[in-house]
Image 1 (spheres, helix red, strand yellow):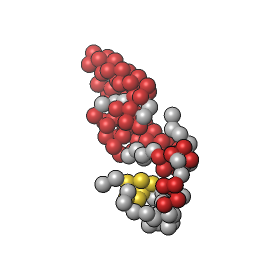
Image 2 (cartoon, helix red, strand yellow):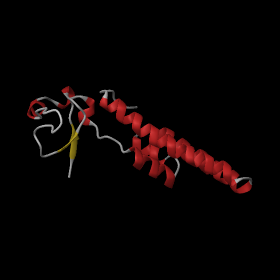
Image 3 (tube, one colour):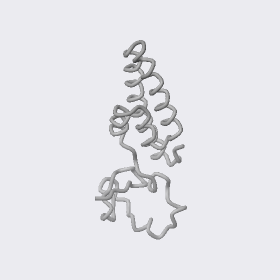
Image 4 (tube, rainbow, N blue to C red):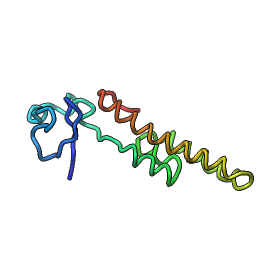
Length: 124
């Protein structure tokens, strides 16, 4: 089932509905407009902060890549790999601390992405 977001209130709406359940916005107005005229928050899909955190739990940097910050995600993955190698040689706690910081960072970045999207600003 596909979803879209109301450009007026940001409420998640099923693709087959013509009106927003929350504010009553009529989507038939948008069908007449070209894609360039639509607000950014209507065109882009939201990112799930919990999923970003889970992905970053599986592999540091993967949550940032999911959100769309690919360069930062790759850099974090490389740093995590280097820290993991050093941790094997010295202390596993350093790696675990870094790993959990990245989980929080991915969660926070997905939330920031959604906030920018709702404000009509194109994220990164």
